[in-house]
Length: 163
Image (cartoon, rainbow, N blue to C red; front, side, top):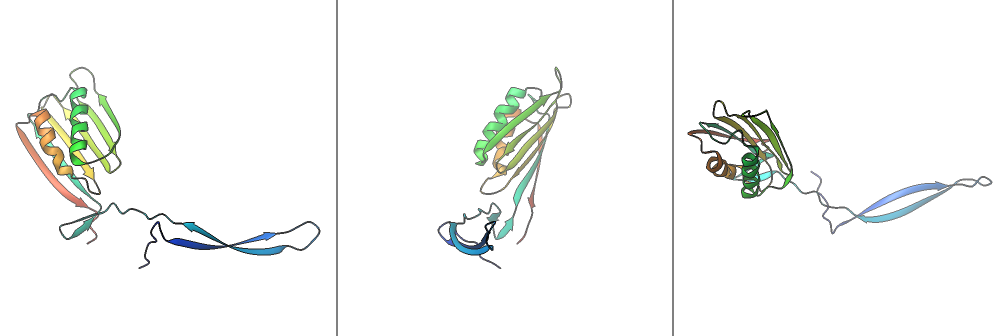
């Protein structure tokens, strides 16, 4: 397996160019160019003897409150993102009319959190996927505190397991 160069290592590139004139033959020039090659960061998780792309947490809440309140949902998402150690890029929430549900996504540098609510049933589905050093399971107590479900079912799956 080839090793990656670090930022401090230099990679030498050999480039060949041909320079010609209209009156004379083309002349071939070879130049050596040194440039820094940045190291690529690996965001796969190395935890508990395993290597995988990310952790996917699914949470189903029953008997939850505030599921038609987009402001509350956004506040809960922002707090959950911070607690998990993730980086927020964008939040988009869509409200389905007065007393309707809310669907939305928080796009993260480390992946996403999505939410779909059915206030008429007191049900909310959260999908929390994160890579790197983030801990998506830490979102669950935050979401529980904001929506006070009578019942909560949580599942966790490791995505992209390679070792």
